[in-house]
Length: 295
Length: 95
Image (cartoon, rainbow over all chains, first blue to last red; front, side, top):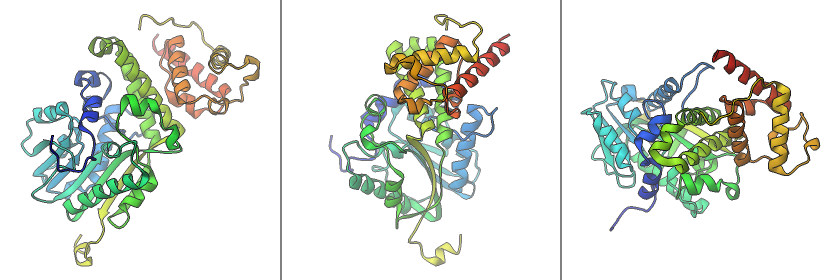
């Protein structure tokens, strides 16, 4: 296959390995919106579904979607965020990018005219008009490969920030959410997670993200919500355990067992701080003051 | 989960004894050297072993134990107390 794009931005084979197991399988343990990223919890009695919608609202607010006419979701998953965005009457153009055929099919099945889903990575995307809002949840962690040096990782992330900045209208905002390595050193990064669950991916570190954004986008908000993701992963683990028999029927004993272990172990990684979960708001730098004063 | 043997009447001491046996087995330690004031981390349980412990603990108890209970507690004593409380709560709820 001839390709003129850089070979980063997420490997399609790797993404499909993880996400195309079977939508019905994920349906057993995700919330009904099929949101496969950290929720934003509030209080002891919160539900997973409510916490996922709160997370989506957080990103829509940080990306200023309420005032936007156009929005890009880089890594739209099964479409929970673009679907919620379509309830904003001002948003006329909502574009979701995914590398998973199954996820794209699901978004198309909504039949919402202002949503366009594209089976391509951000390195392949060539928008003909800029966006007012860009959101990316759970995609950034797929951009770098395990063999990439720190310098190569930073360049990849920098290209992503520069590309997003170039796609934003003046006053446009971006909201990002990603896994990061926390206290874990590279050499102890879990072989289990890297090889069995997310092959061909390497997690970013906070300092790499900061170095990559420097001079390209300004970080206006940053929080490590690792305990939110610990709670989310454990909620998924318990959902899967409750519906174990159905899971085994769908994907077999081996895959079910692999996921049970992965969900619990990842939750533990977040509880202990080995891995973190960053929510970051950004705006492009290098904007003339005359543009900024109009915001 | 019909393959699960539900433990009857689990109190804090029983949970602590289970933890002690389990940890001594997986780490190859003498049971007597594991104390209530030890923590999972200080004993040297990595995330893979802690994962297995959490899953086996649920299987033994026959109830779901949120991981938060294991991680909000710093010592085995506190974990045992939290787990026993949660098991009791779920048995009561289940009627």
